[in-house]
Amino acid sequence: MLAQHELVLTTPAIANLGGLIRFGEQQAATLTLDSLNNNGGRLEVAGADLTLNAREVSNQKGSMIADRVEISAGRLDNQQGLIGASQGSATFKVSEQLNNNGGQLQAQTLLETQGAELLNQGGKLLADQIKITGTRLDNSQKGLVSAEKGELQVNLAQDLINAGGKLQATSLLSLKSASVDNRAGTLVAPQLTLTSSGKLDNQGGTVDATGLELHTADIDNQGGLLQGKDNLLLEARDLANNQGQVIGNVLTANLDSLSQNQGGVLSAEAGQLTLTVKQHLNNALGHLQAKNGDVQIGSGSLNNQGGVVVGNQLLLTNNGLLDNRGGQLVGDRLSLSTQRLDNQGAGLLAAGSDGLLLTLTADGATPGQLLNSQGRLQSDGHLQVNGGQLNNSGGVILGESVGINAAGLDNSARGAVVAKAGGLHVALNNGVLNNSAGVIDAGDQALKVTQLARLDNQGGTLKGKRLEVDGGALDNRQGQLLAGSDGLNLVAGA
Image (tube, rainbow, N blue to C red; front, side, top):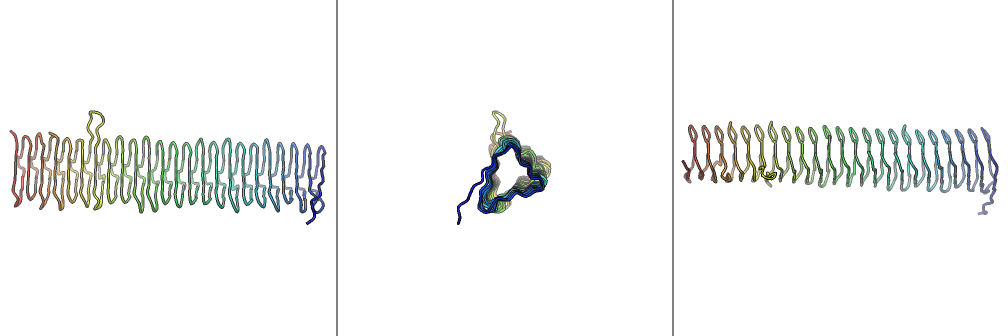
Protein backbone atom coordinates (compact mmCIF):
# COMPACT_ATOMS: atom_id res chain seq x y z
CA MET A 1 0.00 0.00 0.00
CA LEU A 2 1.26 3.45 -0.82
CA ALA A 3 1.96 5.78 2.09
CA GLN A 4 -0.43 8.65 2.61
CA HIS A 5 0.62 12.00 1.23
CA GLU A 6 -0.56 15.01 3.19
CA LEU A 7 -2.00 18.32 2.11
CA VAL A 8 -1.80 21.02 4.78
CA LEU A 9 -3.98 24.05 4.12
CA THR A 10 -4.24 27.13 6.31
CA THR A 11 -6.72 29.77 5.19
CA PRO A 12 -9.30 32.08 6.81
CA ALA A 13 -12.34 30.44 5.24
CA ILE A 14 -13.62 27.94 2.72
CA ALA A 15 -17.07 28.23 1.18
CA ASN A 16 -18.16 25.11 -0.68
CA LEU A 17 -21.91 25.67 -0.91
CA GLY A 18 -23.27 22.94 -3.15
CA GLY A 19 -19.77 22.26 -4.42
CA LEU A 20 -17.29 19.38 -4.44
CA ILE A 21 -13.83 19.27 -2.89
CA ARG A 22 -12.08 15.97 -3.53
CA PHE A 23 -8.54 15.29 -2.40
CA GLY A 24 -6.26 12.96 -4.32
CA GLU A 25 -6.09 9.21 -3.72
CA GLN A 26 -4.40 8.49 -0.37
CA GLN A 27 -3.74 12.18 0.18
CA ALA A 28 -4.47 13.11 3.79
CA ALA A 29 -5.84 16.59 4.36
CA THR A 30 -5.24 18.90 7.31
CA LEU A 31 -7.32 22.08 7.18
CA THR A 32 -6.86 24.96 9.61
CA LEU A 33 -9.56 27.59 9.13
CA ASP A 34 -11.61 30.25 10.80
CA SER A 35 -14.73 28.86 9.15
CA LEU A 36 -15.84 26.17 6.73
CA ASN A 37 -19.21 26.38 4.99
CA ASN A 38 -19.97 23.11 3.25
CA ASN A 39 -23.76 23.48 3.19
CA GLY A 40 -25.08 21.19 0.49
CA GLY A 41 -21.52 20.46 -0.57
CA ARG A 42 -19.24 17.42 -0.65
CA LEU A 43 -15.79 17.16 0.88
CA GLU A 44 -14.10 13.83 0.17
CA VAL A 45 -10.73 12.37 1.11
CA ALA A 46 -10.22 9.06 -0.67
CA GLY A 47 -8.14 6.46 1.14
CA ALA A 48 -6.75 8.90 3.72
CA ASP A 49 -7.53 10.99 6.81
CA LEU A 50 -9.25 14.34 7.26
CA THR A 51 -8.15 16.66 10.06
CA LEU A 52 -10.11 19.88 10.41
CA ASN A 53 -9.47 22.72 12.85
CA ALA A 54 -11.87 25.67 12.72
CA ARG A 55 -13.78 28.12 14.84
CA GLU A 56 -17.00 27.30 13.02
CA VAL A 57 -18.02 24.49 10.66
CA SER A 58 -21.35 24.35 8.83
CA ASN A 59 -22.26 21.17 6.97
CA GLN A 60 -26.04 21.51 6.65
CA LYS A 61 -27.21 18.93 4.09
CA GLY A 62 -23.56 18.46 3.16
CA SER A 63 -21.22 15.48 3.41
CA MET A 64 -17.65 14.96 4.61
CA ILE A 65 -16.14 11.51 4.04
CA ALA A 66 -12.66 10.19 4.79
CA ASP A 67 -11.01 7.02 6.06
CA ARG A 68 -10.56 8.69 9.42
CA VAL A 69 -11.98 12.01 10.62
CA GLU A 70 -10.88 14.41 13.34
CA ILE A 71 -12.67 17.74 13.70
CA SER A 72 -11.90 20.39 16.32
CA ALA A 73 -14.22 23.41 16.34
CA GLY A 74 -16.05 25.92 18.47
CA ARG A 75 -19.33 25.11 16.72
CA LEU A 76 -20.23 22.34 14.30
CA ASP A 77 -23.57 22.46 12.46
CA ASN A 78 -24.33 19.15 10.76
CA GLN A 79 -28.12 19.49 10.49
CA GLN A 80 -29.29 16.93 7.90
CA GLY A 81 -25.65 16.45 6.97
CA LEU A 82 -23.30 13.46 6.92
CA ILE A 83 -19.81 13.21 8.39
CA GLY A 84 -18.31 9.75 8.21
CA ALA A 85 -15.10 7.79 8.71
CA SER A 86 -15.33 4.87 6.31
CA GLN A 87 -12.36 2.86 7.61
CA GLY A 88 -11.43 4.06 11.09
CA SER A 89 -12.41 6.42 13.88
CA ALA A 90 -14.18 9.76 13.94
CA THR A 91 -13.40 12.28 16.68
CA PHE A 92 -15.33 15.51 17.24
CA LYS A 93 -13.92 18.03 19.72
CA VAL A 94 -16.50 20.83 19.79
CA SER A 95 -16.26 23.32 22.63
CA GLU A 96 -19.64 25.08 22.29
CA GLN A 97 -22.27 23.16 20.34
CA LEU A 98 -22.41 20.19 17.99
CA ASN A 99 -25.76 20.30 16.18
CA ASN A 100 -26.55 17.02 14.45
CA ASN A 101 -30.34 17.43 14.31
CA GLY A 102 -31.51 15.24 11.45
CA GLY A 103 -27.89 14.53 10.56
CA GLN A 104 -25.57 11.55 10.74
CA LEU A 105 -22.17 11.07 12.35
CA GLN A 106 -20.62 7.69 11.74
CA ALA A 107 -17.38 5.76 12.06
CA GLN A 108 -16.18 2.28 11.25
CA THR A 109 -14.52 1.77 14.63
CA LEU A 110 -14.75 4.42 17.39
CA LEU A 111 -16.90 7.53 17.27
CA GLU A 112 -16.03 10.04 19.98
CA THR A 113 -17.51 13.44 20.77
CA GLN A 114 -16.01 15.82 23.31
CA GLY A 115 -17.14 19.25 24.40
CA ALA A 116 -20.29 21.06 25.38
CA GLU A 117 -23.76 20.48 23.98
CA LEU A 118 -24.64 17.72 21.51
CA LEU A 119 -27.96 18.09 19.70
CA ASN A 120 -29.15 14.94 17.94
CA GLN A 121 -32.90 15.42 17.53
CA GLY A 122 -33.87 12.95 14.84
CA GLY A 123 -30.19 12.42 14.11
CA LYS A 124 -27.93 9.36 14.14
CA LEU A 125 -24.58 8.50 15.70
CA LEU A 126 -23.39 5.12 14.39
CA ALA A 127 -20.14 3.21 15.00
CA ASP A 128 -18.75 -0.01 16.41
CA GLN A 129 -18.07 1.86 19.67
CA ILE A 130 -19.20 5.30 20.79
CA LYS A 131 -17.96 7.61 23.53
CA ILE A 132 -19.76 10.88 24.31
CA THR A 133 -18.34 13.38 26.81
CA GLY A 134 -19.93 16.80 27.28
CA THR A 135 -22.36 18.99 29.17
CA ARG A 136 -25.63 17.68 27.72
CA LEU A 137 -27.12 15.48 25.01
CA ASP A 138 -30.50 16.02 23.34
CA ASN A 139 -31.35 12.77 21.55
CA SER A 140 -35.10 13.33 21.40
CA GLN A 141 -37.53 13.05 18.49
CA LYS A 142 -36.34 9.62 17.34
CA GLY A 143 -32.66 10.38 17.74
CA LEU A 144 -30.46 7.27 17.59
CA VAL A 145 -27.08 6.59 19.18
CA SER A 146 -26.01 3.05 18.33
CA ALA A 147 -22.81 1.16 19.18
CA GLU A 148 -23.08 -1.65 16.66
CA LYS A 149 -20.28 -3.92 17.91
CA GLY A 150 -19.27 -2.74 21.35
CA GLU A 151 -19.68 -0.21 24.14
CA LEU A 152 -21.56 3.05 24.35
CA GLN A 153 -20.23 5.43 27.00
CA VAL A 154 -22.06 8.66 27.80
CA ASN A 155 -20.64 11.06 30.40
CA LEU A 156 -22.57 14.33 30.82
CA ALA A 157 -22.23 17.14 33.34
CA GLN A 158 -25.88 18.08 32.91
CA ASP A 159 -28.89 16.35 31.37
CA LEU A 160 -29.63 13.64 28.86
CA ILE A 161 -32.84 14.20 26.91
CA ASN A 162 -33.85 10.95 25.23
CA ALA A 163 -37.61 11.54 24.99
CA GLY A 164 -38.70 9.44 22.05
CA GLY A 165 -35.08 8.59 21.30
CA LYS A 166 -32.93 5.48 21.49
CA LEU A 167 -29.49 4.69 22.90
CA GLN A 168 -28.24 1.16 22.32
CA ALA A 169 -25.09 -0.95 22.55
CA THR A 170 -24.15 -4.54 21.81
CA SER A 171 -22.10 -4.94 25.00
CA LEU A 172 -22.07 -2.24 27.70
CA LEU A 173 -24.07 0.97 27.86
CA SER A 174 -22.62 3.20 30.57
CA LEU A 175 -24.51 6.43 31.24
CA LYS A 176 -23.64 9.18 33.73
CA SER A 177 -25.54 12.46 33.86
CA ALA A 178 -27.21 14.95 36.19
CA SER A 179 -30.67 13.86 35.00
CA VAL A 180 -32.24 11.60 32.37
CA ASP A 181 -35.45 12.28 30.43
CA ASN A 182 -36.36 8.97 28.82
CA ARG A 183 -40.09 9.57 28.34
CA ALA A 184 -41.21 7.19 25.59
CA GLY A 185 -37.51 6.62 24.95
CA THR A 186 -35.38 3.48 24.88
CA LEU A 187 -32.11 2.53 26.55
CA VAL A 188 -31.06 -1.01 25.63
CA ALA A 189 -27.90 -3.12 25.95
CA PRO A 190 -26.79 -6.50 27.35
CA GLN A 191 -25.17 -4.69 30.29
CA LEU A 192 -26.50 -1.27 31.25
CA THR A 193 -25.36 1.01 34.07
CA LEU A 194 -27.09 4.34 34.66
CA THR A 195 -25.83 6.79 37.27
CA SER A 196 -27.59 10.12 37.77
CA SER A 197 -27.43 12.68 40.56
CA GLY A 198 -30.95 13.80 39.64
CA LYS A 199 -34.13 12.31 38.26
CA LEU A 200 -34.71 9.46 35.83
CA ASP A 201 -38.00 10.20 34.06
CA ASN A 202 -39.01 6.97 32.34
CA GLN A 203 -42.72 7.63 31.85
CA GLY A 204 -43.75 5.34 29.03
CA GLY A 205 -40.08 4.59 28.42
CA THR A 206 -38.02 1.41 28.28
CA VAL A 207 -34.73 0.62 29.99
CA ASP A 208 -33.91 -2.96 29.00
CA ALA A 209 -30.80 -5.05 29.63
CA THR A 210 -29.63 -8.49 30.62
CA GLY A 211 -27.88 -6.98 33.62
CA LEU A 212 -29.22 -3.58 34.72
CA GLU A 213 -27.91 -1.22 37.41
CA LEU A 214 -29.65 2.07 38.20
CA HIS A 215 -28.21 4.58 40.67
CA THR A 216 -30.25 7.78 40.71
CA ALA A 217 -32.08 10.25 42.93
CA ASP A 218 -35.73 9.89 41.89
CA ILE A 219 -37.33 7.58 39.34
CA ASP A 220 -40.67 8.21 37.65
CA ASN A 221 -41.55 4.96 35.89
CA GLN A 222 -45.23 5.65 35.30
CA GLY A 223 -46.27 3.32 32.49
CA GLY A 224 -42.62 2.51 31.89
CA LEU A 225 -40.44 -0.61 31.88
CA LEU A 226 -37.22 -1.14 33.83
CA GLN A 227 -35.95 -4.64 33.05
CA GLY A 228 -32.84 -6.64 33.86
CA LYS A 229 -33.45 -10.06 32.35
CA ASP A 230 -30.81 -11.71 34.56
CA ASN A 231 -30.59 -9.22 37.40
CA LEU A 232 -31.68 -5.71 38.26
CA LEU A 233 -30.14 -3.52 40.96
CA LEU A 234 -31.99 -0.30 41.66
CA GLU A 235 -30.79 2.36 44.11
CA ALA A 236 -32.80 5.57 44.34
CA ARG A 237 -34.25 8.15 46.67
CA ASP A 238 -37.83 7.58 45.48
CA LEU A 239 -39.59 5.33 42.98
CA ALA A 240 -42.97 6.29 41.49
CA ASN A 241 -44.23 3.26 39.54
CA ASN A 242 -47.94 3.73 38.78
CA GLN A 243 -48.80 1.31 35.93
CA GLY A 244 -45.07 0.65 35.59
CA GLN A 245 -43.03 -2.55 35.48
CA VAL A 246 -39.76 -3.19 37.31
CA ILE A 247 -38.63 -6.69 36.34
CA GLY A 248 -35.57 -8.87 36.82
CA ASN A 249 -34.87 -12.55 37.27
CA VAL A 250 -33.31 -11.38 40.52
CA LEU A 251 -34.48 -7.95 41.67
CA THR A 252 -32.83 -5.85 44.38
CA ALA A 253 -34.09 -2.35 45.18
CA ASN A 254 -32.73 -0.01 47.84
CA LEU A 255 -34.93 3.08 48.22
CA ASP A 256 -35.67 5.89 50.62
CA SER A 257 -39.33 5.61 49.59
CA LEU A 258 -41.61 3.89 47.11
CA SER A 259 -44.24 6.61 46.76
CA GLN A 260 -46.54 5.08 44.12
CA ASN A 261 -47.18 1.61 42.72
CA GLN A 262 -50.87 1.68 41.81
CA GLY A 263 -51.29 -0.84 39.01
CA GLY A 264 -47.53 -1.27 39.05
CA VAL A 265 -45.40 -4.39 39.39
CA LEU A 266 -42.04 -5.13 40.96
CA SER A 267 -41.29 -8.71 39.95
CA ALA A 268 -38.44 -11.18 40.39
CA GLU A 269 -39.09 -13.67 37.60
CA ALA A 270 -36.80 -16.51 38.71
CA GLY A 271 -35.04 -15.59 41.94
CA GLN A 272 -35.42 -13.39 44.99
CA LEU A 273 -37.06 -9.99 45.32
CA THR A 274 -35.20 -7.92 47.91
CA LEU A 275 -36.79 -4.56 48.66
CA THR A 276 -35.35 -2.22 51.28
CA VAL A 277 -37.26 1.03 51.85
CA LYS A 278 -36.02 3.33 54.61
CA GLN A 279 -39.23 5.30 54.92
CA HIS A 280 -42.67 4.63 53.42
CA LEU A 281 -43.43 1.81 51.00
CA ASN A 282 -46.71 2.48 49.18
CA ASN A 283 -47.97 -0.63 47.40
CA ALA A 284 -51.65 0.34 47.45
CA LEU A 285 -53.29 -1.48 44.52
CA GLY A 286 -49.84 -2.63 43.44
CA HIS A 287 -48.01 -5.93 43.06
CA LEU A 288 -44.73 -7.08 44.63
CA GLN A 289 -43.80 -10.63 43.66
CA ALA A 290 -41.20 -13.34 43.25
CA LYS A 291 -42.62 -15.86 40.81
CA ASN A 292 -40.17 -18.64 41.70
CA GLY A 293 -38.26 -17.25 44.64
CA ASP A 294 -38.49 -15.54 47.99
CA VAL A 295 -39.55 -12.01 48.87
CA GLN A 296 -37.61 -10.06 51.48
CA ILE A 297 -38.92 -6.61 52.41
CA GLY A 298 -37.69 -4.13 54.98
CA SER A 299 -39.56 -0.84 55.38
CA GLY A 300 -40.30 2.02 57.72
CA SER A 301 -44.02 1.71 57.03
CA LEU A 302 -45.98 -0.24 54.43
CA ASN A 303 -49.29 0.58 52.75
CA ASN A 304 -50.61 -2.53 51.00
CA GLN A 305 -54.26 -1.51 50.77
CA GLY A 306 -55.70 -3.55 47.93
CA GLY A 307 -52.18 -4.62 47.04
CA VAL A 308 -50.55 -8.03 46.64
CA VAL A 309 -47.21 -9.30 47.96
CA VAL A 310 -46.48 -12.90 46.95
CA GLY A 311 -43.49 -15.25 46.94
CA ASN A 312 -42.31 -18.68 47.99
CA GLN A 313 -41.07 -17.43 51.33
CA LEU A 314 -42.11 -13.95 52.45
CA LEU A 315 -39.92 -12.24 55.04
CA LEU A 316 -41.21 -8.81 55.96
CA THR A 317 -39.76 -6.49 58.59
CA ASN A 318 -41.66 -3.25 59.13
CA ASN A 319 -40.87 -0.63 61.75
CA GLY A 320 -44.25 1.12 61.83
CA LEU A 321 -47.73 0.50 60.44
CA LEU A 322 -48.40 -2.30 57.97
CA ASP A 323 -51.73 -1.37 56.39
CA ASN A 324 -53.08 -4.46 54.63
CA ARG A 325 -56.75 -3.51 54.47
CA GLY A 326 -58.14 -5.36 51.48
CA GLY A 327 -54.60 -6.49 50.65
CA GLN A 328 -52.95 -9.89 50.33
CA LEU A 329 -49.67 -11.21 51.72
CA VAL A 330 -49.19 -14.72 50.34
CA GLY A 331 -46.40 -17.31 50.45
CA ASP A 332 -45.51 -20.87 51.33
CA ARG A 333 -44.08 -19.35 54.48
CA LEU A 334 -44.83 -15.92 55.94
CA SER A 335 -42.62 -14.32 58.54
CA LEU A 336 -43.77 -10.81 59.45
CA SER A 337 -42.47 -8.43 62.07
CA THR A 338 -44.24 -5.09 62.53
CA GLN A 339 -45.37 -2.70 65.24
CA ARG A 340 -48.92 -2.53 63.97
CA LEU A 341 -50.82 -4.62 61.43
CA ASP A 342 -54.15 -3.37 60.11
CA ASN A 343 -55.66 -6.35 58.29
CA GLN A 344 -59.27 -5.23 58.41
CA GLY A 345 -61.74 -5.14 55.55
CA ALA A 346 -60.96 -8.51 53.94
CA GLY A 347 -57.22 -8.26 54.43
CA LEU A 348 -55.50 -11.62 53.95
CA LEU A 349 -52.33 -13.24 55.24
CA ALA A 350 -52.10 -16.69 53.66
CA ALA A 351 -49.27 -19.18 54.20
CA GLY A 352 -48.71 -22.70 52.92
CA SER A 353 -47.46 -25.71 54.80
CA ASP A 354 -44.29 -23.90 55.94
CA GLY A 355 -46.39 -21.80 58.26
CA LEU A 356 -47.05 -18.22 59.34
CA LEU A 357 -45.21 -16.26 62.02
CA LEU A 358 -46.48 -12.80 62.99
CA THR A 359 -44.45 -10.83 65.52
CA LEU A 360 -45.91 -7.58 66.85
CA THR A 361 -43.14 -5.40 68.26
CA ALA A 362 -43.56 -2.73 70.90
CA ASP A 363 -42.90 0.96 70.33
CA GLY A 364 -41.35 1.84 73.65
CA ALA A 365 -44.03 1.26 76.25
CA THR A 366 -46.74 0.91 73.60
CA PRO A 367 -47.39 -2.73 72.71
CA GLY A 368 -47.79 -3.90 69.15
CA GLN A 369 -51.26 -4.25 67.70
CA LEU A 370 -53.20 -6.46 65.29
CA LEU A 371 -56.47 -5.16 63.83
CA ASN A 372 -58.14 -8.10 62.06
CA SER A 373 -61.83 -7.18 62.05
CA GLN A 374 -63.29 -8.87 58.96
CA GLY A 375 -59.76 -9.92 58.07
CA ARG A 376 -58.17 -13.34 57.73
CA LEU A 377 -54.92 -14.95 58.87
CA GLN A 378 -54.54 -18.50 57.59
CA SER A 379 -51.89 -21.17 57.27
CA ASP A 380 -51.74 -24.71 55.96
CA GLY A 381 -49.07 -25.27 58.59
CA HIS A 382 -48.53 -23.80 62.04
CA LEU A 383 -49.78 -20.27 62.66
CA GLN A 384 -48.03 -18.31 65.41
CA VAL A 385 -48.80 -14.79 66.65
CA ASN A 386 -46.48 -13.23 69.22
CA GLY A 387 -46.84 -9.97 71.12
CA GLY A 388 -49.23 -7.08 71.24
CA GLN A 389 -52.94 -6.54 71.55
CA LEU A 390 -54.98 -8.62 69.10
CA ASN A 391 -58.38 -7.49 67.80
CA ASN A 392 -59.94 -10.35 65.86
CA SER A 393 -63.52 -9.12 66.23
CA GLY A 394 -65.39 -10.67 63.32
CA GLY A 395 -62.11 -11.93 61.89
CA VAL A 396 -60.56 -15.35 61.25
CA ILE A 397 -57.30 -16.86 62.49
CA LEU A 398 -56.96 -20.34 60.99
CA GLY A 399 -54.09 -22.83 60.93
CA GLU A 400 -53.28 -26.51 61.06
CA SER A 401 -52.13 -25.67 64.56
CA VAL A 402 -52.27 -22.26 66.22
CA GLY A 403 -50.22 -20.53 68.90
CA ILE A 404 -50.99 -17.09 70.30
CA ASN A 405 -48.75 -15.37 72.84
CA ALA A 406 -50.07 -11.85 73.33
CA ALA A 407 -51.04 -9.14 75.78
CA GLY A 408 -54.74 -9.49 75.03
CA LEU A 409 -57.20 -10.96 72.52
CA ASP A 410 -60.59 -9.61 71.39
CA ASN A 411 -62.30 -12.44 69.50
CA SER A 412 -65.84 -11.12 69.85
CA ALA A 413 -68.62 -10.64 67.29
CA ARG A 414 -68.18 -14.03 65.61
CA GLY A 415 -64.44 -13.90 65.62
CA ALA A 416 -62.90 -17.32 65.00
CA VAL A 417 -59.58 -18.82 66.07
CA VAL A 418 -59.43 -22.35 64.66
CA ALA A 419 -56.84 -25.13 64.50
CA LYS A 420 -57.78 -27.64 61.81
CA ALA A 421 -55.64 -30.61 62.82
CA GLY A 422 -53.18 -29.64 65.56
CA GLY A 423 -53.27 -28.13 68.99
CA LEU A 424 -54.32 -24.57 69.83
CA HIS A 425 -52.68 -22.58 72.62
CA VAL A 426 -53.66 -19.05 73.63
CA ALA A 427 -51.38 -17.53 76.27
CA LEU A 428 -52.09 -13.98 77.44
CA ASN A 429 -49.67 -12.18 79.71
CA ASN A 430 -52.22 -11.48 82.43
CA GLY A 431 -54.40 -10.01 79.71
CA VAL A 432 -58.07 -10.17 78.82
CA LEU A 433 -59.66 -12.66 76.43
CA ASN A 434 -62.94 -11.34 75.04
CA ASN A 435 -64.65 -14.24 73.28
CA SER A 436 -68.16 -12.82 73.45
CA ALA A 437 -70.07 -14.48 70.59
CA GLY A 438 -66.75 -15.80 69.33
CA VAL A 439 -65.31 -19.25 68.64
CA ILE A 440 -61.96 -20.74 69.67
CA ASP A 441 -61.88 -24.28 68.31
CA ALA A 442 -59.16 -26.93 68.38
CA GLY A 443 -61.40 -29.64 66.95
CA ASP A 444 -60.06 -33.07 67.86
CA GLN A 445 -56.93 -31.63 69.47
CA ALA A 446 -56.16 -29.91 72.73
CA LEU A 447 -57.14 -26.30 73.44
CA LYS A 448 -55.15 -24.45 76.09
CA VAL A 449 -56.10 -20.96 77.24
CA THR A 450 -53.67 -19.75 79.88
CA GLN A 451 -52.29 -16.73 81.77
CA LEU A 452 -55.60 -14.87 81.73
CA ALA A 453 -56.64 -11.98 83.91
CA ARG A 454 -60.22 -12.37 82.71
CA LEU A 455 -62.21 -14.46 80.22
CA ASP A 456 -65.46 -13.11 78.76
CA ASN A 457 -67.15 -16.02 77.01
CA GLN A 458 -70.70 -14.66 76.90
CA GLY A 459 -72.40 -16.43 74.02
CA GLY A 460 -69.01 -17.75 72.98
CA THR A 461 -67.55 -21.21 72.45
CA LEU A 462 -64.26 -22.81 73.53
CA LYS A 463 -63.84 -26.31 72.13
CA GLY A 464 -61.18 -29.02 72.18
CA LYS A 465 -60.67 -32.73 72.68
CA ARG A 466 -59.04 -31.61 75.88
CA LEU A 467 -59.89 -28.16 77.15
CA GLU A 468 -57.64 -26.35 79.63
CA VAL A 469 -58.58 -22.90 80.89
CA ASP A 470 -56.24 -21.35 83.44
CA GLY A 471 -56.77 -17.76 84.48
CA GLY A 472 -58.76 -15.19 86.35
CA ALA A 473 -62.43 -14.33 86.31
CA LEU A 474 -64.69 -16.23 83.92
CA ASP A 475 -68.01 -14.96 82.53
CA ASN A 476 -69.64 -17.85 80.66
CA ARG A 477 -73.24 -16.65 80.46
CA GLN A 478 -74.85 -18.41 77.47
CA GLY A 479 -71.38 -19.61 76.61
CA GLN A 480 -70.01 -23.09 75.95
CA LEU A 481 -66.91 -24.84 77.25
CA LEU A 482 -66.88 -28.03 75.16
CA ALA A 483 -64.37 -30.74 76.02
CA GLY A 484 -64.03 -34.09 74.30
CA SER A 485 -62.87 -37.43 75.59
CA ASP A 486 -59.69 -36.02 77.15
CA GLY A 487 -61.68 -33.89 79.56
CA LEU A 488 -61.88 -30.35 80.94
CA ASN A 489 -59.47 -28.64 83.31
CA LEU A 490 -60.78 -25.29 84.51
CA VAL A 491 -58.91 -23.02 86.91
CA ALA A 492 -60.65 -19.66 87.34
CA GLY A 493 -60.75 -16.92 89.92
CA ALA A 494 -63.73 -15.06 91.23
